[in-house]
Image (tube, rainbow, N blue to C red; front, side, top):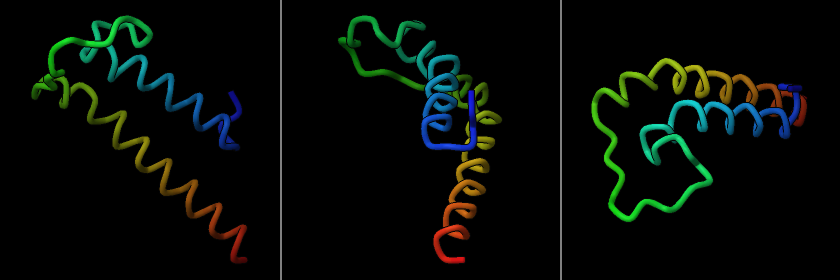
Length: 73
């Protein structure tokens, strides 16, 4: 996966969502049936995903800085 372009970033985010967010939200099947009840994210889910989410925010900041630098010189 090429992480140096928007398509690569999107694929990376999908993988992380599929592996981290969806398992607790929809029993691991992001393409399955829509939940009929509200999804509850508990403290254990937040704790389990915190490191990956922080890493994605950091990557997003770096990517945005790179794009702005290219656009504005």
